[in-house]
Image (tube, rainbow, N blue to C red; front, top):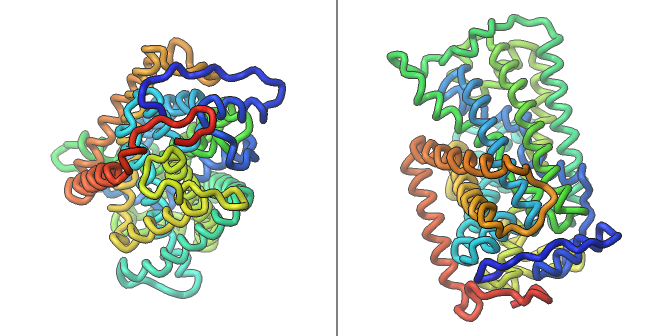
Amino acid sequence: MSTQPPTEPDRPLLDSGADTDSAYLEKLGYKQELNRTLGLFSAFGVQFTSIAIASGIFTTLIVGFGFFGPASFWSFLVGGGLQVFTVGLAVAQLVSAYPLAGGVYQITGRITGKPWLAWQTGWWLLIAHTVAVTTVAVSIAPFVAGWFGVTFEDNTDALPWALGLIVLGTVINIAGVKVAAVLNNIGVVAEVLCVVALVAVLLIVKHPTQPLSFLSESGGTTTGGNWFVPFLLAMILPAYAISSFDATGNASEETKDAARKAPMASVMANVSSYVVGIFMVALIMLAIQDLPAVMESTTPVKLILDTAVGTAFANIFEAVAIVALFAALVMLQLTGIRVLWSQARDGQIPAASWLRKVSAQRIPINATLTIFAISVVFALWSSLLSVLAAMTALAWGMAYGVVVVVGFYGLIKRKLPSHPWHYGIVSPVIFILAIAWSVVLCALLIYSDPTHVGLGMLLVIASGAVIYMLIPKSRRGKSIDTQAGHL
């Protein structure tokens, strides 16, 4: 990673797409070390599975109910649109310019020439992906345990099951990107089945439905007609449901024609997840039979489906959703591994030579084991789903907030290399809106839980600064050898 904002190279014009990818990677300072096997569908699947919109809503819609009741539909509509059509589009354009493992870490460093800032943003995303792995494991542990007749009395009961799921996901990632890609594709199919089944059954199966005006019902979350603050806080819901915007970017060194297909796959996954989410949230809200019971339930979506279309369908939907969420766990871990490996490849982390090691199967094996260990630490630190989810969203929000600011600077100063995925004269407007929304979202997340989320993020930043200072001075912030990709 360069210590000065470089004049980035144009992409070579070669006949073979694979040769073009490898040649441009070499011009950016790296050799092809990972298997470049992912096509557009698999790249789409990495992002779509990481989002896991249908199964994610199954476990996180409780957040919307808690802040704003059924009226949180409007928060999802507005907040999700701001997420997808500002931050999502901006990050996709930056991925096209820098299709490198490491995503935000690489983009920030190459535009600003400030390794410490790049390292921090990479650290935040590493934490976001790692905590997200733990979050998914904790969220699905009660359902998986229930299949074996086990019920939890408190949050600590979920720990062994969550750890088991993290271990299983790690084993799959160690097996290789092709194995992970197969599970990823299964996850895509499971997500599509969830979407089609839920939408179809709620539209076709006869059941009592609420009028559209019910979507303005706050469920007792507002007092004295003050709806604005609950409406804003409920916009945290789409931040939980639609994020990880650079998942395809982190897998771009394993994607064919990455400068085009990685951002295209990202936008396709983000937009389709948003549209699907709107329909799903609306149909679920309108299927509510007993609002007070739903507002008090710890599994409100399952309760709604049980009463609307029957327990049998609710159980089938649950099973498919859990498969999709487990696939999301694997993909979130995979992208987090690529962030850590990218930092190690640049020598910008302690024990870099050990962490950058690639196995005979071309898997970043030691980075994988390290991400596994960090996920376990977070599982031991907290099994409270709301804290883990908020920490994940804030780490993502801050990292993307920094990169869209940096990207806007690079755009107006013409520091970005040529890239095929862009929005022409509309690009600056998209970046400005992305910056504004990132500030609002981070403020909302901190306001929702200043102690756990705000102070927790300060601890993440402080620990990142300490780790950065532990990098040997001979390597810290130094440029890579642009021919070999080594320090």
